[in-house]
Amino acid sequence: PHPNAPNTQEPAGNAGCFPGSALVHTSHTSARPIVALGAAGSTPLLRGGPAGLAAGPALFFTHRSPAAVVDYFLRISTASNRSLTLTPNHFLPVLHAGEKATSLVPARLVKVGLDSVLVLGEEGGYVEDKVVGVEEGVRGVGLYAPHTESGEMVVDGVVVSCATEAMPPRVERVVRGVVAVAWRYLPGMKAVVQAVPSWM
Image 1 (cartoon, helix red, strand yellow):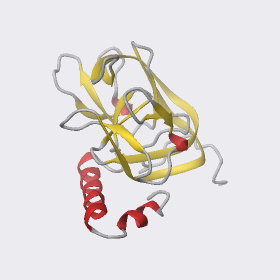
Image 2 (cartoon, one colour):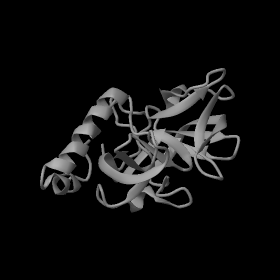
Image 3 (cartoon, helix red, strand yellow):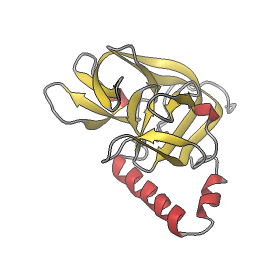
Image 4 (cartoon, rainbow, N blue to C red):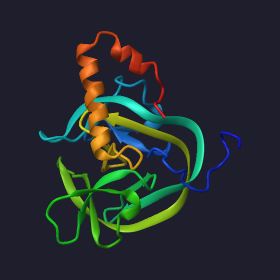
């Protein structure tokens, strides 16, 4: 098939991604189109971690395909009118009804009315936001999957993981850990990583 032809089903093993229309937050109050991100390490992205929100580089991209056209995105809508579009196998932290701690789950398992996601609060930090809608089969152009050192980032105002079912949380944690160490201690490794548009 033509490389730019629409995909009507999510390919088995496909790395989870965001469409080119996604906005990635570079700080609590600013965001930029994911298509405008430069090479790995060139744009600090807002990310989570033990110390809370901070800015850090995208270490690498598992997908970076501007011309890809797909029809299998999910669109998650929240009570505060946030709208997040991503592939069904992309993980994000979700708070299930009756639970006090979040769990990482694939977007395809998010339940309307029962689950909440984490979004940027007006005064900083994260706040819970009830999921009020999940739309399947959303068409989008572009596939992008940056990975930060913490394994989290903020897309369209919603906190997401960098892990996917193709690269599960434990595997993703090891990969980005190795890349982060290589950046710090192996001369020239950062330039090598930046020279690779995407890994998948």
